Length: 134
Image 1 (cartoon, rainbow, N blue to C red):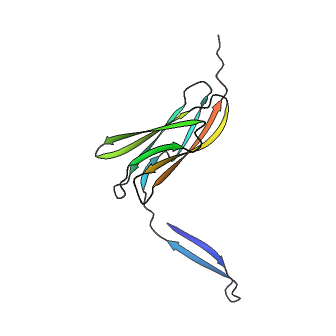
Image 2: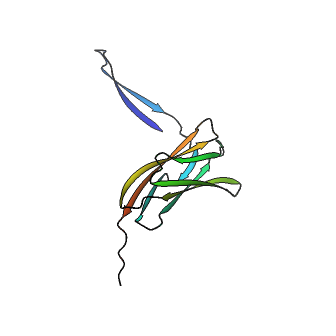
Image 3: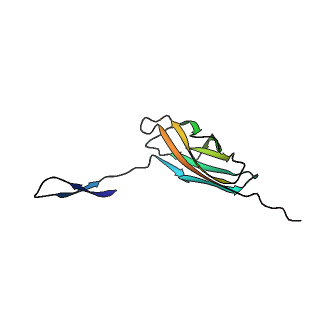
């Protein structure tokens, strides 16, 4: 990764200085998708999942999952072994009964000292219930 920042100084000879920051950024885990969108009709089940696979360099366990607000969603976690890798499946279910939008964050507590928490954004859009035709 490469970023450049501009610094303003009080020095008359050099009032602006550019500083370039370069470094490698390693993924702590593969999170798919990185945000969750729950969209559907009121009165129907609306469920989404996020899969988290720890990077082998930074192994960890997901210990707990908890929505920040928790009024519109509930979340549960399931650990799965696949091809000698541990995957964590986070299932998020809509609880909102009436049409509208909401935003919440699911916080995952991990066993890692490098990253003790992972946050997943959840966006909800509940539409009017589908009208039944006869």
